Image 1: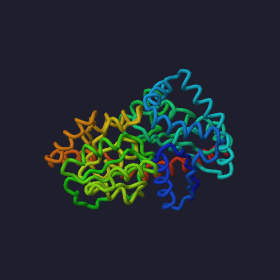
Image 2: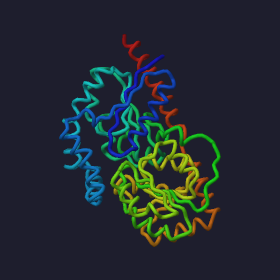
Image 3: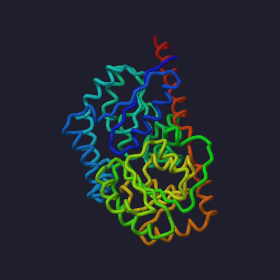
Length: 371
């Protein structure tokens, strides 16, 4: 039976939107009504500037401060309660968005709206599900008592159970929904000695030093500067004339998937979506610590290193050494590819959609029984 699904995201980085779009596409393909809403398009302007602009500013200019805020708000102390009060207070326009859409199920791929959902769920009788896009479930993901959680790994599930015991039996391990371009079994020949360099959608990170160091090696470098025009222009000015360096700005998912499948090594930061895109494409992943956003990406990096699909590289000298070592050892790269594919969840969007359909059916049965 046709159902209505409303996916709530927020434009802080690209990952939350990418996961939401992948899920919406799958639900639409099944004949349901589905729409993704960016919460930042509906909140008051001051809150949007503070929430989104403040995040990007801290990540670019003071990542250590962002790391401090991330870690202290993961405990039930002042930072957590202040942020929860702000989210609950200033996302009030989302209530009307949900009322107008009349969804059977609200799905969050970002945590900002969660504090408001218990009251609107009671009013409308809809289900609420959360798609956690970080490997470690930060306390912000735990708010609002959702009906169901979708988490990326068994590690995430274990921590979620410890923090919210009621979630046992209400959680599926599914990976993170990714664009269909990253899935499938198409075989690609990886270009010899080609490096794909990316530090996420906002284009933060010490690109210049990395390009300068690696461009002197026998490699071709493709650089994805993200949606930051300033970063793309700066890198083009510095390296545009280099014969072995190509500079790109924002890259569409199908193009990025193609680049990942063809590159020898991906060098970047371990955002949740990038992590599962690399796993699905079997791309050997060097996570460069100076690119990382402190907090969730550090946890992702350690996990990738632990499972053997990636290597966490701490400094420029180690990066050069690791690149040279892996380029000279195809067997090591093959092991990383195999570990990635083994831990990938290319069907995450389908798995989540299956469960959401079950939740809506059980909700309908429950209402009919009560009647």
